[in-house]
Amino acid sequence: MTFEKLEKEKQNKIINAACEIFAKHGYKKASMKDIAEAAGISKSVLFKYVSNKENLYMKIFRLASDSIIEADEISYAEEGSDSDMFSLMRRNAKTRLSLFKEYPWIYKFSYTAAFDNDCFVKEHVRMELENYRKPRFNTSEIKSGHNPITDGIDVYKGLRADISPTIAKQLILWVSQGYLEEKLFKDEIDPDELEKGFESWIDILEILLKGSNRSCDCKEQKGW
Amino acid sequence: MTFEKLEKEKQNKIINAACEIFAKHGYKKASMKDIAEAAGISKSVLFKYVSNKENLYMKIFRLASDSIIEADEISYAEEGSDSDMFSLMRRNAKTRLSLFKEYPWIYKFSYTAAFDNDCFVKEHVRMELENYRKPRFNTSEIKSGHNPITDGIDVYKGLRADISPTIAKQLILWVSQGYLEEKLFKDEIDPDELEKGFESWIDILEILLKGSNRSCDCKEQKGW
DNA sequence: ATAGCCATGACCGATTCGGTCACGGTTATT
DNA sequence: AATAACCGTGACCGAATCGGTCATGGCTAT
Image 1 (cartoon, rainbow over the protein chains, first blue to last red):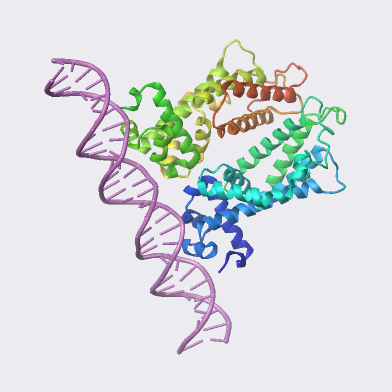
Image 2 (cartoon, rainbow over the protein chains, first blue to last red):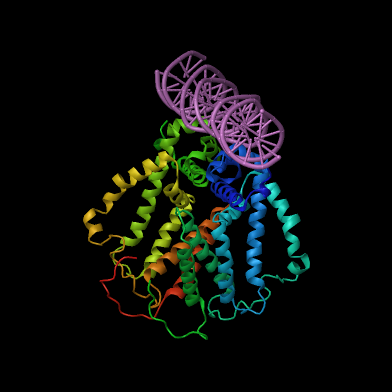
């Protein structure tokens, strides 16, 4: 009857279908019929699981923001691990990638949800973010400029002197976005190839961004 | 009466509105009412200009692919200019940016059009690309591995040894995509700030990708 | 035999779709 | 001043689609 009592595989089929359709068309233009078809079930039974469109959207939205935040926190908060940006980048890439493998459209959905112009989305997403997500970082931490996510690491460590951490972060973000977005439109994804490809891009970023103090040995051209 | 006889400013309003709505929602889910509203005109008069939705879409599609190809060709084909990738990148950035300023959504539209699942789009876009766009590069040129766009430049010149031209080009693409996409969701764009920001990112890319000057005329290595 | 569960296609009223048209205001010509 | 030509608009059309419901029929366990 309820969505939560379904077997995990069926749940994920619905989640992925909803993520994809909502991400592609936005809340208003995404139709429940399209979502049902993408999930491979009938529209009627979809409504029995999720009761209505608004509930489905909020369910997906909460799942998405929870998963993404959790994935980030896991990779950031690891104790005893290296504290430089590149190690963090590698750890974070792992968790992001495993989330991507389970829910390929979750990042795209999360991104579009933040810019959706529909009034229902605007109202509820904003409310959700303010009343429910924010307590993770209490105001004193924000005010003092501290952030539990970036607090443990030294953003300058290992970074070349002529590039600021802000720029490095932006670059990393754009590369991972570009790489993953490209994969979204392939019909099927080979998990191994996905991971290998991602890792070699991280290698490239590290080559480009790493400071001269650590690895000055100019590597010869790689395979590609 | 016809679209072509309108004053340029009104034409551009319609083009930009259609680009934005089609890019955001795809062909099928984009409604003529939304496009008319975004253009600030009534739906009735929009139909008088463009006769129907399919014609409007093809009009925009042809404009987009023509403009983008032309912008690229201009920056690539400039005679007597430097032949290394960085100079080419800077020239290309200028033409892309000026096109972006006139039609901000044109790149996003062009990208989404290629992946649109609607059967009308799939049929006509493919037909258009095969029968109408290809003659610019005749088959003998393609077969011989020569390409008028990349033929004039030495992709290895100035590039650091441990990064391949393919990677450099992909990186440049993702950075410009990321930068421009970010601007799409701002309410208003300051042209000066837009250009300055873009140029500083090109500077950063050049810092990261430039290698020690090495003479390179490895002509057997071709393709990006 | 039957009671309970579950998925489906047909169906609901309401909205929106692409597209048209009669009408009113404006301008140019006579 | 009269009129013809033009142009933009709101109301409107039948058809399609929207979110959501429900009677039906197959399947399973008692």
